[in-house]
Length: 239
Image (cartoon, rainbow, N blue to C red):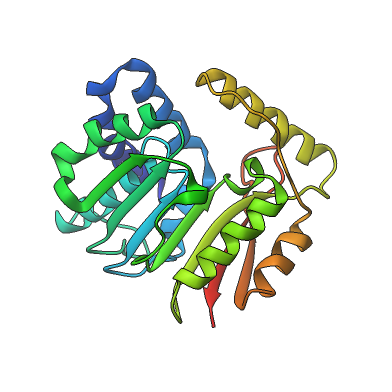
């Protein structure tokens, strides 16, 4: 994605958050501008046209904002990227901090209507059915190990053949870079007024093994471009 296209997309994706307050708007701009996962998901064409996307740990709905804004640019004939954005997506999101989900609804539903619905709730209890793509970005390590496994079991049972689970996780075997990732997590939580009861992390190899043992074919990609952190994105397809 060219810098010019990213600037246009960033503006369109974040402008709706202005009406929800200065902090929410600046958070959206910083996250979408500097976090490499959003641009990577678009550039690689990970999400297919028409997908029903379930975003577990959706926060303020930035993933939906990013992809729906990209589709809008494409519809206007203003998309110049090598890979066209997916069309006809619908987003459902679940976020433990209900005020963040409400913020996303206030910002985005006036623009995109019923193409997204964000709600407060615990991802461990979320309704998983009807999704073609389930996304969990920086979520699993906030859940104790037995509950991680139960959630992954539920995700696998809910997804049909060819469906996708997209996760980003920290690589606990990455030494200093991983410790910096943990510090960034704690700072981000503090900045938003969240409380962290703990983190339950695994080496990348253990994450991959957990997914492969459940019948996923896993594609592994480093996801720390431009940052000092130790994140990997796991694109896992039901086979």
